[in-house]
Image (cartoon, rainbow, N blue to C red):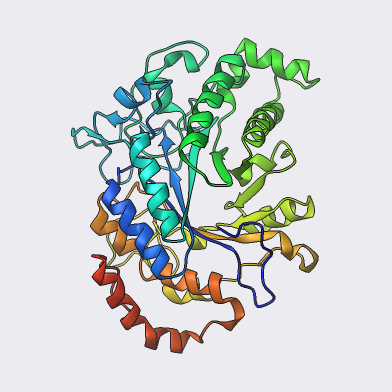
Length: 403
């Protein structure tokens, strides 16, 4: 992957990716390989694998084996949209939820992932691994309760939303994180390792004497919740230094900016992404644009006549009109490494639905990222699209009906 290249004058970018989430619903390895083949076909060159979350741990750890035996499966899965989903502060597993009662699980062995890395490299695709930390730790803590402060046993998350459980930010938590990232570096050859950093609730830290002392020792008020952004920033800096010792760069969602991002990291802008892009690039931090427009788990336009999804999303035409440099001052455009679509899988229960949600919008984004301003007009893009869709069908991929 030509990650060190600067964007071309025509707006083309070197990092052209998509994120696949096998945590909420597991994606068999054969289908991950199929995605790699599809990306190579449309000139995308990065597959970001989200390998851990509250609802399942998918990376085999030899140092922490209960992540495989205990954290890789959940006892049931919420049906439809969780009750009261989106209410701030409400635990995602609440009395309004309904569940299917079926066990769901799966994981990838290190040998399988090593083979995947080699296969992808042969196709010109880099696999960027993600272990989400210090938030989204419910599954890991179900396997190892001592990763929290009180050692309370829990089950792997069975619903969607943001769980309050986080990784402890003192030495036991650091040891776990470095052990896992060390194994990740042994398996993956990507110049980037993603540590998530998103949606990390601070309440548990704020109630733990150990974390409170850490914050106080930083000269901050332990009774002020915002102080714990600095604790996360300290944790991120520790991970960045560890990855740098392995010759890797830390990649994280834009929350890693909130407490002050360390040097040498790359930010994936997703929230108020134009603001995040501006904040990062003004600080000299490279970015990858990953806005909600490119969340392909959202419906392809209005929800009417579409399968259940997290909500209405971007149409094919809106994706094709995407401006990779939106929110980035002209003088900082060399810091835009690329762009990435997201396929979170809460509402993508199987591969057939994955392809339905991903294509043809991924084709549109691929052209935006690869050709930049030299891409076809939208009208000409649509004329050529049926032939390109037929090529995907040869791979066994049937996407959304064309407009």
